[in-house]
Length: 248
Image (cartoon, rainbow, N blue to C red):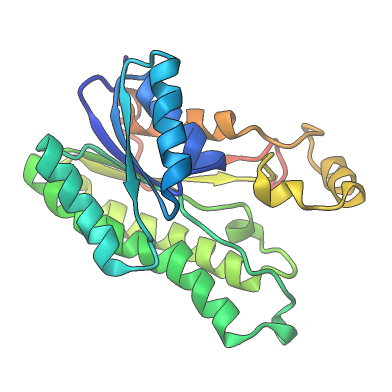
């Protein structure tokens, strides 16, 4: 129980990496406010934590991270109900893939709003409480696309590269208050996003991954838990790539 009595917020927790991360944090003893736009998957997630008899618990927190007021309300609710906030995992993200020449302004703006601006809003809101407590762990989910780029994802890659630059800057600002800010950059992971890819494309992608497979959401969650744990206290401003060797 590395995270006993600690309180966490995880955005985009209704599925994929966010869902696995919420469960992994709760398994280590944390109380996790799981945020997503849809309430029903969060209720199912909370029930699963109870069924699995996890040491921590999951609190459903319906939130649209594209809306500033809802993000700030989530942080305020968490602190009001628990009197603390130890961990923030900014995971919520969307894709609107198309080639740059065909990309509409709205497709670019929407991805930036959810994938980057929302992280700024959440981090700013959460850090106010963490600074007072002189303790905090912020883990932002980026992507190897933000490191190497990816055709058809100029909006997504820009947002994830922005997450990396933002995280490194804030890590320098908050370090003296015992607050760390780190990034996990997944490669291809088995999820709803990759399930829709044609089988032929999946196989061609696997051929260029040294591990010859897609990652599991639980493997990304394990990296997040490590960066949020006491064992990572001296790791700050780091980008932990979890991609089976894809970006080497």
